[in-house]
Length: 230
Image (cartoon, rainbow, N blue to C red; front, side):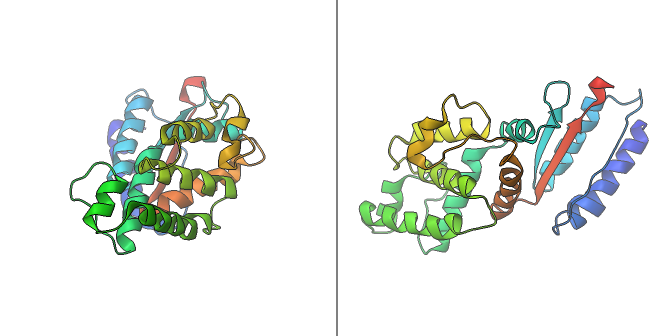
C-alpha cells in the first residue's frame, strides 16, 4: 500500500463504513499490509484520527506485546485505552438531565451538593433518586453482563464522590477491567467475584461496545497490529 492508496483507502473506510455501515450497527473485518512507503504506525495514527473524528472508540493492540489469541488479554489491553471516568461522567450527566434535573454549565465535575442546591433538593434524597435511576438504566440493561453492569454503576456513583471511599472503588474497578487487580476479594463488597478471564471476557467485550453506544459513541475501531511480528 502506497501513501496515495492509503489515503484513498481511509477515505472509503470513513465514508462507507465509519459514517454508514458500522455507525448503523454493522461490523467489518479489514486486512491491510502497508508497503515500505508508509510506516504502519503512520497508517494506524491516521486511522485513529479518522475514527475519533467520527465518534468511535479507538484501540490499537500490538501482537508483539499482547497475546491477541487470548480474549481476556485482548480485552485488558483495550480497557487500558478507554476513558472509563469520562464515559461514566457523560452517562451520569445525561441521566440526571433526562430525569428533570439541571446541571451547572461548563462544570467539569458532577458534585452532588452543587446539583442538589441548583435544583432545590436535599442531597440525601437526590442520591436515593440517582441510585434508582442507575439501577433502572444500567443494572436492568441486559445488553451488558452482570459484572460489567455492576462495575459501571460503581463508576457512575464514584463520579459524584458520594459512594463510600469512591476513589478506592473507582481505581479497583479500573484495575479489574485492565487485568491489574491483585486480589479479587478486594471487590467482594462491590459484588464482583471473579477476574476477567477467558470464560467471561467475550461477554464483557460485548458489554463495552454496548456501553459505548449507550454513551452516544458510534462504536469501536480495533486495530490488531502484527506488522512487527511478520
